[in-house]
Every structure is written in C-alpha cells, then in structure tokens.
Amino acid sequence: MQKLTHKEILTRQRAKQADRKCIPLVVILNHIRSLYNVGSIFRTADGIGIEKLWLCGITGTPGTSRTTISKTALGAEKAVEWGYAWDALSVAQVYKDHGYEIVLLEQIKGARSYQIYQPSKPVCLVLGNEVEGVSDEVLKLCDVPVEIEMTGLKNSLNVSVAFGIVAYDIKYKLSNL
Image (cartoon, rainbow, N blue to C red; front, side, top):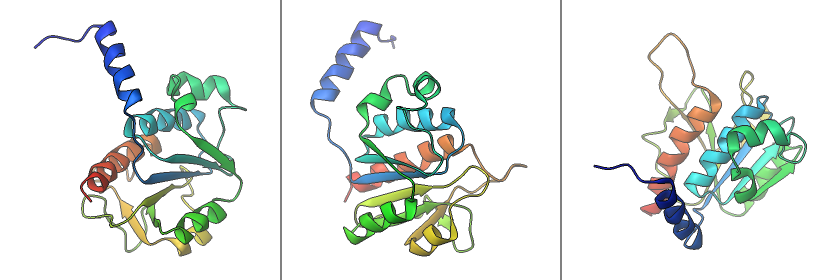
C-alpha cells in the first residue's frame, strides 16, 4: 500500500465532480445550535452527494455565519445546494407532498434502529436541536423515526456524527433501489 499524493487526491476529486450525481436524499436541520456542527454536516453532505440541505429556525447559514461554518465545512458549503426557511414543518410538508418519506433521526418511542430501516422512495431526513430534538409538529409529520442505539453512559452522539452514520447508511440503501 502507498498513500496517495495531494496531487493524486485532487485529480481524483476533479474527476468525481464531473460525474457527480445527487442521491434522492434531502436533509433538514432544525434549530441546530452549533455552527461547527452545521459546517461538519455540510462537509459530510457533500461527501454523500445529497440533493439539498435545508437550514431551518436558528440554524446558522454560510451567509451569516461564514467563518465558523467554513472552518469545518472546508468549502463544502459552496458545493452543496442549500436553502433557508424558518419553519421546518412547512419544508418537510412540501417534500412529503412530493412523495418523499419523512425520516426523523430522534430518540422517541417507536423509533427503530437505522440499520433496520429500509427506504422505498426518496428520503427527507430531519435532524433536530442538539438538546430539544424536533418539534411535536414535525414529529406528527414523520413517517419513520430512526435512532442509533447507544450502549455507553451517554445517550446520544454529536448531531454531526450521528448524521454521518445514518446518512451514509441511507445513501447505500437508496443506491440499491
């Protein structure tokens, strides 16, 4: 084995950008407090090839919180299509009306392991506030709640880490449809 040089990595990246295809996965961030989490999610979303990232509520945007988001996004905020809306419920409703399955990454009664979940149509994945989760209104719109099972002392992962785990899993499942 041999490490790739920086030049080889850039050449590979340019070739991938030319062939880039988005997967039918839209992500809604609702009231995410940490701008570092938002930047990290942008970077992971770019790697996955999501269709669109919606920043809702108090979630910071690259236009208003450029330095902090850019520090972790490393330019992905320029590559990922994104939009802003105050109301996550109205954004989720639009996607539900267009045939997307509304999936919440949330620890609630009835949530199933993300590993068991099998999408059958395009997915709109909703992530809530780091402390409060998603609103009750968004919860009512949900088709499938999924969670990451925890066995340690802590009951959850950082939202950007949890997003990466679940979104990559959904990506591979959607690519097999």
